[in-house]
Length: 615
Image (cartoon, rainbow, N blue to C red; front, side):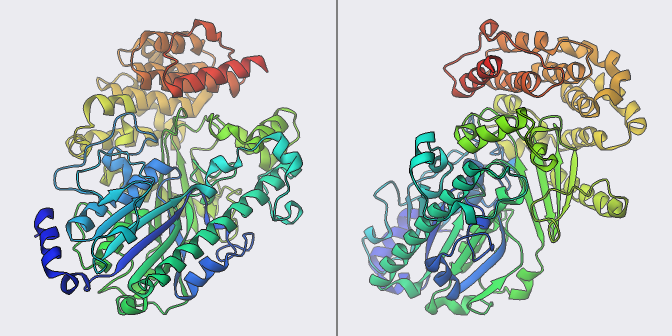
């Protein structure tokens, strides 16, 4: 049983070092937006980082560590809760409404605080949940482990560094032309899906420069701990908060979006808690859901049952136990104004990516991403017809399923989902992902506006209450992966279901089939006037894609007729698709839209529509 916080702090004042000396300290050094690919410790294409490499020499290098999400707020909420975001209702970036944690569940930082740790965060939180009172001792720009009143009190300190953030690559043309990089652009190893241009090379080289700044920060942090005499009492975790940050990484479920660097320096005093040999690599899979449970386990604190993760360090664990872990699960939903649902599952060297709106290309624009000149150049080269087949895939429709052998295809460009030799593997991974979504259950089978209206006071309880319903929606969503002859009858039935969410996912699957599902247009036509606006949007996408209706009429009517900005964002997303990626395109008269431009996501979409029209 946990002691009340006030009693714990009172006990600390009385007992002093006799109580505090029994637990290790923790420092998390978090660099924003960088996958493992930019550090030579993890990837030959990366830069040398002597301070991070020194951590590795005194600890463990995790070669298969994964964020569960490819964007900050969702990834950081996953870290804090030790639980999957689609189960908690925290999967939408920059949440419209923060989720309530279920009764009895805390952020793991608060569990440490309650147990007597001095917990500090400097400074980024970015949670998609309502933060419980007492989560941190201090979270501010001044928060520091050195501020604790009793030097014997164990501490947990998290520091985030934005020198590697995506925004550092939002440089100007003038910078590109006049400011040299430390790393030689001519020497960088560009992935084959990038156009090989001076701008892309410069952008890559500049980001390698940023990673060397991060390395210096790591060195400064270690030196401060050493100077204070607590280095050998402290576990140091260095990792990226998700992947990135060049195009096709942050906000995407490719390895560059999810596979993060992780090094844990093991202190001499507490190395008996670690079964791995110091200075070695661990190839077992660890996910962000596991980080909190690991710290709690090392601190000798029971891991709550409501966490989905399991420890990868501490008592009663062997290196062999961790080496056997071979699964990583990823999720992507709304990133700012870009809305879609994508899930991924990696098992060993095989990666499965499931796109639930596969007609949306990866290039469906996000305004913040597009501030990067490299993104802009890539788009220009595509429209000029100057890309290779591999490079232009970013702008094309995706398959609903993709399967990659990462041992042979680390850049995820050779989709094996249609390979007859991989039919059984594809089915196994499809089934495994379906079981994962059903077991949570995954709340993204409901659109965000419905969750905000009905679920956010207790999303976990809402999911459990509607679990059977969600299972049925997943089955309808999965119909798009069958031959159409097998999917026809259940889709026809779902299009006329009394459940609006069944109608939504039936229209969605029809949109994925495209012209193959043309004979279901008669069943879908009434959905253009459905009582649920999300259903109307999906029906417009299906019928617009096969040329049975002008989708603009429905989508503009939805945008102008709703006071729910989440519905408007979803409809604007569809308008951008039809205007920028559909063939034929459907130009939009932006002046007829009456959406609330005070909302950033709406304003960004409208601005983009204006820019596309002006091209």
